[in-house]
Length: 175
Image (cartoon, helix red, strand yellow):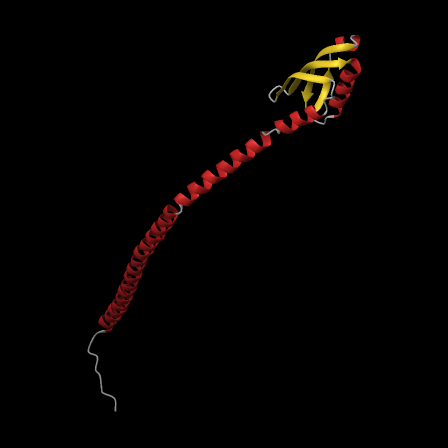
């Protein structure tokens, strides 16, 4: 059996009580929402602190690793600079002994060289000497033209006018 309930309240008070019950229900709902929102906000703030600490740890780790490799990076930089300097020196290197040897080997027996200078900056060669005969001088001049590192040979006309004891100074350009 159901218990009997008597309501002795007037209809206006019943309506007012219903409104109060609805108001209490909404008030409780807003409180629950506010509590849930507060909990979520605290969790978010806590996770922000954890993420910031994790970021700081990662940054410190990266800095310590990069500091460990600074010496290695500096050594590599020094080696690269040394290799680059060596490469530049090798590019500007000219094998003077081989050039002098080629000039000497192209000199006929009747020609005596008294002066040989090669200037890398101005790219000039100057050869002075004395040939016993004009033919020896002309042979020497032809031999110089055959050398691959010499071009634009300029010899004095006086070498062609004398038959014997021809003194000469030949100038030429280096390639």
